[in-house]
Length: 322
Figure (cartoon, rainbow, N blue to C red):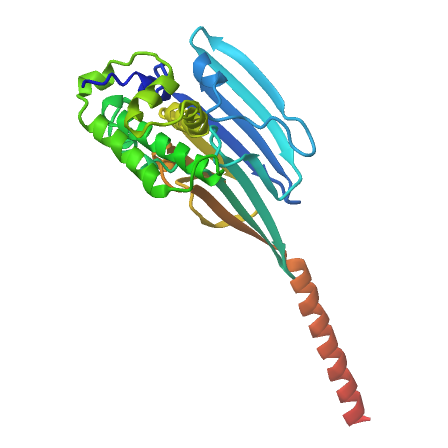
C-alpha cells in the first residue's frame, strides 16, 4: 500500500524562512545592575512569530518596546530593559520559543572587584532527537523535508506515547509502545521520497488511526495521542523557524576582561556571533569575567604598616639611647 504522508505537513511550517538578525547589547554597570537592548530585523512573518521573543516584563519594570515597518518587506523590533537582579530567566527552556537566561555575579574582595557574566541559550536537542533534521540544517541551505520528516513524525509519536504512559493515561507497557513506533518506522521506510513530498493537509487523528490500525486501538486513542504530540510538535516548529536566524551578543563590562568565550573583541566590547548550528544540540553558553583593582585600600594598608614600623623604630631608639 502506498501511504500518502499528509500528516507530516503538520510539522513543517508552510513558509519560506527569512533571515532575521537579532542583536542583544548588554551593559553591566559597576554596581552590578544591567542594561539590555534587544534589536531584531526581518520580514513581518519572522518578526511576529515566537521562535525568539523579546522580554515582555521583569520583576521591576516593563521593557520599552518599539515596532516599526522599515520597508515593505522589512520590520524591526527594539526592546530595552534594566535589571537589578543578578539572575533572570527571559524565556524558559523547553518551550517552542528559544529559551535563554542571564547571570551576573559580582565578587568583592579587599582590593578588587570581579564581575562574572554568563548567558545560556537553550539547546534544541535536534542532534539527539532528530538526527536527520540535524544533518539537513547543518549541511543544507534549505529545509527539504524528504530526508527528515518521517523520522520527525516517528519521534513525535514516540514522545506522545511516552507522555501518555507517564501520565498513566495508557497502560505502563513500554514494549507495546516500542512495537507501535517500530511499526510506523517500517511503514515510512517503504514510502518513496516523492510521496513524502506530496503533502496533503488532513486530520492528524485519522492518520494516527490508519497508521496504528493493526493494533486495534480504542476509538479515543488517536485524539489522546494527537494531543500528547502537540507540545513536542510546537517545539519542533520553533526550531525550524530558527533556521535562518542569526544572533549577535555585544557585552560591555566594567574593568579589564580576563577570560571569555567571545568570538571577537572590538575595543572594550565582547562579541558573540552564532546561528542555529550552535543551538541544535546542547545548551550554548556565553561566559566572560572582568576585574577592577582598587589599590587605595592596599595603599592605606602599606601606609599604615610603614607608619606603625616607623613609630616602633622611634620608640626603640628612644628606649635604647635614653
